[in-house]
Length: 307
Image (cartoon, rainbow, N blue to C red; front, side, top):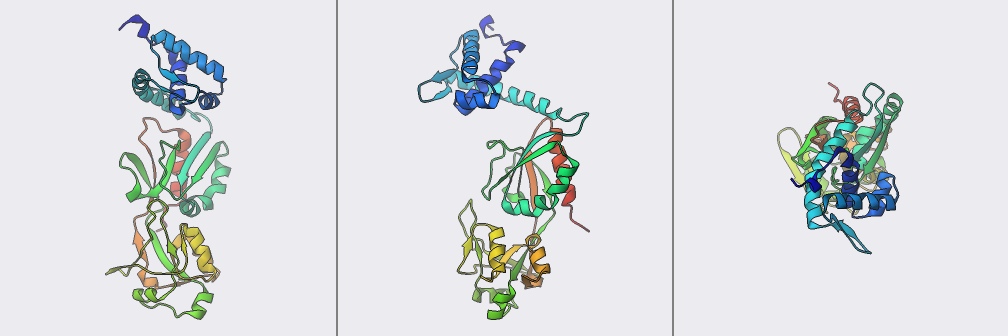
């Protein structure tokens, strides 16, 4: 190889600087991430280009982006830089209390089911770990959006991700408020639901309405129920049911307290639908950071199915 293309260990900061600018397509955003001035970052990248004898970035007054050579160079160094970052991150907290930031992508429902009930205890037991939750009912891309881990139903997890089951199987139950049942008879069979005001869930990602699925151990029934209220959030559906706006089919874990306080009444108890539950998912990494391993172990143990 021509000597001018030799990469030295001292060039690693410049490689990381170029990767950051190319990823953001912006010197300003890259400088903010790296904690340096824009002018210092620009000088570092120009010095790397002079050393290599190749223009890596195409700069205009409006945009910054890799040249063809820069794109090939980025594809070559990217995996190596990521592996170095993982190796360094995996040492964080070794020999000491685990520390650092863990970013988690999950829905409001999964946060309410699996995280919120145990968050205060986690904070007490791991005071040096910071947590950031991205709450969205859309399907977050963990890697592309900068998250360490996500939570989804198993069937929705990309095949190239590592998974860890969370909370066991889940059950959907049908509930209504006493006020609603003061005005409507209680259903005694699944098809009675077709004559009721049912609060519908519209999926954020697909836009389709959820059909109600019921099982009795022998036969499964799927119904296209109707109702005057449609929401795209199951927690909001619970609130609407408590307000007497109709019947709701929701995760059993979301209505334990309203059932105990008699704000809600469960019906068709022998027809609860059960299905495989949620999982943590995260990229296949050579080195798992201690902080992430600590987070996964704690919340999986906290939500382990009883019995």
